[in-house]
Image 1 (cartoon, rainbow, N blue to C red):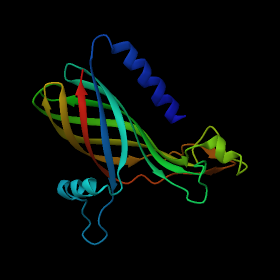
Image 2: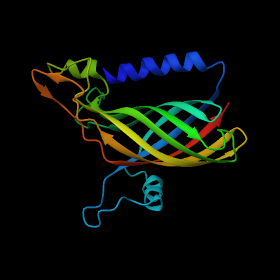
Image 3: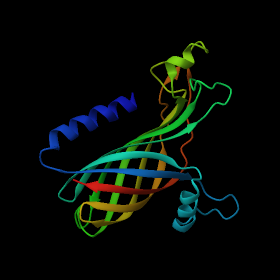
Image 4: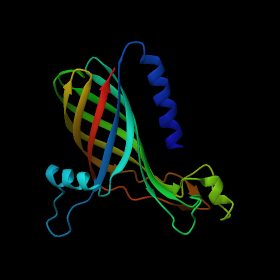
Length: 208
């Protein structure tokens, strides 16, 4: 399963290289977009920043990155919670979540004051109950090992950061390519979750 493979690979890589790399921890807000149906264009950085400030469609989360020289290995998790008002206990709350394993190249190194970088990665975008065990007490047939809907994807893009010693801020624009291979099948049916073709990411980080 994709999410388990990402987690195992990330843990192995972080343990294997932790003694030699520079650790970066941070928080991010991710916004997913598709082309405007009239103009055929994606939102500009300024338009995305306006949505971010308004909290429109933001997936909040965090990330860790190990930078070895100019090369970085990162793992991120972002999510957006959808509350179910009919169940005050919260056991029917849903969420969209995105798990991503990435490889980046920092042109001037990870601590440079001006930090342009290239990035590519693989991820899982899914939709599911936040409390699957709780939801299973109300609805039968919930698979505890797989999300209700999910898709693997590949992403690539570039970004720019500004670092002030051990603190930094950054943004990046990433193209997403959804996999045509089903995440899983159940009785011959697959349950993909649509991956929008582009995302803007805004973040802040600590360089340890």
